[in-house]
Image (cartoon, rainbow, N blue to C red; front, side, top):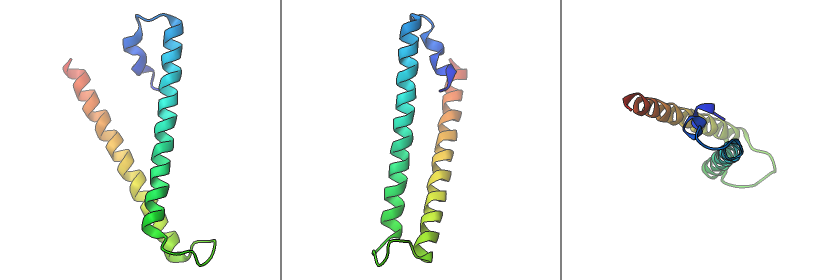
Length: 93
């Protein structure tokens, strides 16, 4: 967890800070799982058309790899952009 997120919580008692920290950690885990599930669903839907065998064929495997790479690059870029915007807002205050 990013400790700077707790900077505005200095006025709270220590017990409340710990609860908030645990809540933020849970939210981050939930968001990570949501992103992973979204990735799996999106790439599976886009790349797998039939089930002739239990393993992916080469074309499906290549499609899934590209899809996952694209999804993760996009997610990182969006995250960096939000961080830039958040940093710009913080410096304006």
